[in-house]
Length: 252
Image 1 (tube, rainbow, N blue to C red):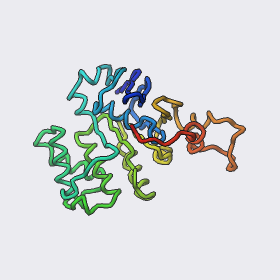
Image 2 (image 1 turned 30 degrees about the vertical axis):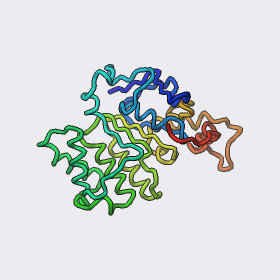
Image 3 (image 1 turned 45 degrees about the vertical axis):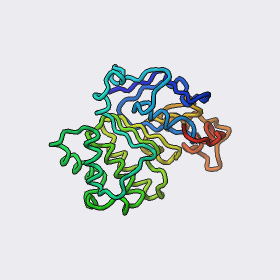
Image 4 (image 1 turned 180 degrees about the horizontal axis):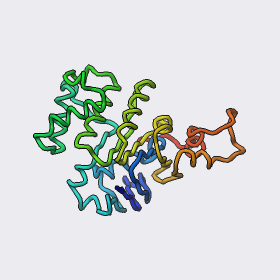
C-alpha cells in the first residue's frame, strides 16, 4: 500500500500554503509536525480533496486519486481539526448519520457502528448525548467516525487539540492501536503526540519539508555542541532547533 505525493502545491492568493511537497507514505504512523500556519491542515485537505490543488499529483497504489474518485474516498478516514458535532444526537445516531454520508451498505451499518464504538471504548455511552461528553470523549467519537468502513488511509488533524494531558495520552494510545495495516497521518504541533508512536516524522515549515525521518534519526541530526543540560536530546529539542523561530500564523 502506497500513498505518493509529488510536487504538491497550494496557494491562497499571494501566500504559498504548500510548496512542492513530495513524500511517499506506506503502512505506519507518520507525524506531520509544524507550528500553526506551517501548512499541515492544507496538506490534509489536499489529500482528502476538500480543497483543490494548484499543482502536483497524489497517487494511491499508482493511481491518481482524482481518477479513483469514490473508490479512494471509500478507503479514506478523516478526523478534521474542527468539526461541528451534533450535540443533541447520541453517539450511535451521529455514527449512523456519518455512515450514511459515507455510503456504507445499509445492512452493515449497525455492526460497523458497534465495531467502532468498541474500538474507541464508547460502547457504554452509545446512547448518551454528545453534548454531555467530555472533550476526550468527543474526540473519540470523531475518531470512531473516521474509522467507519475500515479505511486504509487514516488522516488525523490535531486530534488532541484542547484535551488535558490524561485524555491526550488515552487518545494517543487508541490511535496507536488502530494503526496496524494502514497509513496513518497525524498532523500536530504537540511533540508528545507523536514522539512515542510515529514511525517517521515530517518537520513542516512555511509549506516546505525541513527534515524527515525516524525520531532517532532526527535527534541524531542535532549538533553535539548544543547538547542541553540533561546531557541528551529529545524530539522537543529537534522541534525547537528546526521550527522554534516560526512565527505563529493562522493555519491555511
